[in-house]
Amino acid sequence: MLASLTLAAAACVLAAGTGCGGPAAPTSATPAARPNFVVVIADDMAYGLFGAGRRLPFLPLPNLQRLASQGVQFDRAFVTTSLCSPSRASILSGLYAHTHGVMANESIELSPDIPTFPLILQQAGYHTAFVGKWHMDATRDSPRPGFEHWVSFRGQGVYEDPTLNVDGAVVKRTGYITDLLTDYAVDWLNQRTSAPFLLILAHKAPHAPFEPAPRHAAALADATVPEPANFEDSFADKPSWQRRYAGCGGTAAAFTQCPDPLPAELPPSPWSGRAPWMLDYLRTLLAVDESMGRLLATLDSRGLARSTYVLFLSDNGLFLGEHRLGDKRVAYEESLRIPLVVEGGDLAARRVSAAVLNLDLAPTLLDLAGVAVPGSMQGRSLVRLLRGEAAGVRDSFLYEYAADFRIPVVPSIVAIRTMDRKYVTYPTLPGEEELYDLASDPGELTNLADRPDWAPARADLRERLERLLQATGESR
Image (tube, rainbow, N blue to C red; front, side):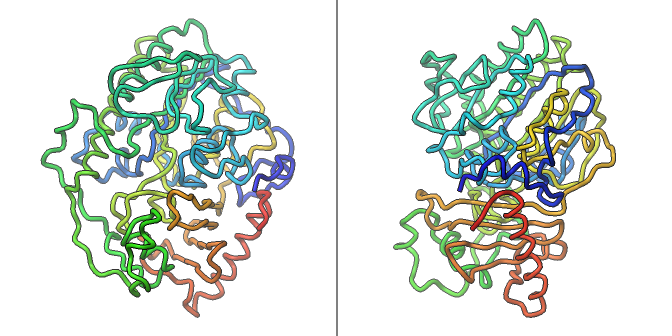
């Protein structure tokens, strides 16, 4: 499925958000000619846990809240593949997964022939460091191109007492992973004697299995997560595999543990707002928030806050009970949507409603640095949006997911999301489709794909999806 970068560069349409022509002319690189960057990536963090859209007021995330209140909050930020490795490759490369080729978790490495924004910044004179979860090619944790300082681990890693690769040396550490990674990040920041620099801190948290720091194990003792409005999904008009997934899980055992044939709809289920897994998930975020506080304090104490852009995002979203689910992958909003905040430098606090993608990060940072954006990148710079200037916005984007042998119930997915509608197809399940009117049904509870009165809309979206696939260099 790996498309040529030449084709991806040539295929440029506004709707797809691709780069047009040759290298993009950079916007002015303020607040300094060569600003610094600190990029913090959470793992599986749901949207709406901090910032203007905060939905769990009992969850104390003061440092992330501060970042959001002082920075630019993107209300509609999405990933193009809701899975760790593909999304991380898209963040680094500015490419859709079918273009960069990392379609699965852990087993595939991003090709060294694909330019990434860290490598480009390093070549432009930036000091660069990567600290945390890499998650591509889990057989090795050795340093990757584009970074002069490297701290990582194999695959998912562990929360307690990890074995790390520090600049090529194996180091056994004692302690909690979020704290240890933050120690390395802060130490590296404190060693900066000259600008510019790029630091990527990629947390393991809050990925499953959810293990909060020991100091947070008893936190949120009185908390109850409210039932989502779309928890009670019967899946009556949804593809049958979703009933299996919601009712029996995603592993191979679901094919034998679920009744066959499946019921036409799932019966009502009780909501548990105090489910241990959900509270532990939220507890792991407390250390992530403390980590952000330490980073911001370090930048302040070093006098670097004004010259540094701080970005916080997640590699994908996560279900917290919506549609009775607790993972990602599926093309529902909770899976696609992520937190994204950019703070620092000359940026004023604001909220942006335009749809933006994880693959926009690479061209944005290059643009802020005053470095030419490769024409092969399929994302687009968000600099004008960051500064509140008029900018062309995408009217749709592609979502794709390749079936994972570890979660075989979820099939491959190809979908298009416009500003108010979503059309979902399953290449291996002909005839299984979904169509949602997001304006009237934001919870995606009513599938309109088989409604006669929605046939024209379905045909239009199908055609737009095919054009989007062609424009981004994918064929099927």
